[in-house]
Image (cartoon, rainbow, N blue to C red; front, top):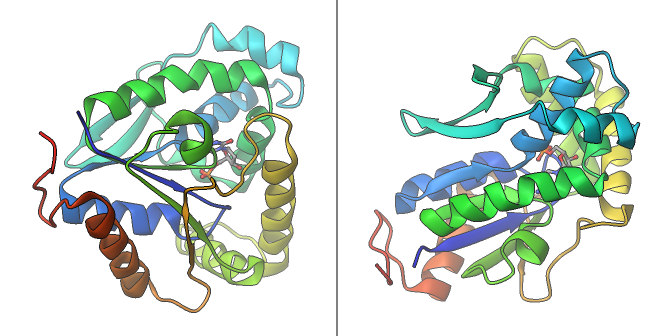
Length: 232
Ligand code: DC
């Protein structure tokens, strides 16, 4: 049996950076499920279609083969054989991903792929519904959050470092809009699972947050850093 660590939380809470470091510590693979929703949004937008048109998006699903591959230990997202990992990081795709993610068939479409990866590997998987829907029996569930301003500050830094020209106000507005959409959608809304540990990183730096998670995982699973699974 593989070990599954589920990390959920709102956009910009540092999930990906923190989860990546934690996965490395334990020798687990890091699975960024948001990238799958982004890949779908990217495809729909590239086809010139409306991400809010559920019928059109559902039709396009049959043309989409999303895959996660691990190259030099790093997750890359492939869309019909093309590596789109870098192209899916724009604000337009972020918003589009949030919009396609409310479509039940889109969630179903990605559900089994996520479960299969978790069944076959020791994973740290991050998203919005991992502890609540995708991996309800995860060994450890963490709900990672921070204030909206702090999250917008971090996202803005990341985007400008990647050469995107966006103002802090635009990013904060996007963060608030996405929070609302992700938390209020009918299916698999973002919420803390009852058995998830709440970690607020507003005043904690990356190093501190990684330590916090490592300690929780060790305590809950008995797994050791460097990768010595409790169950083989
Ligand atoms: O984690 P992210 O910002 O890359 O995710 C992009 C969008 O995808 C997010 O706004 C909501 C959606 N998403 C989801 O609905 N369920 C997941 N498990 C992961 C992401």
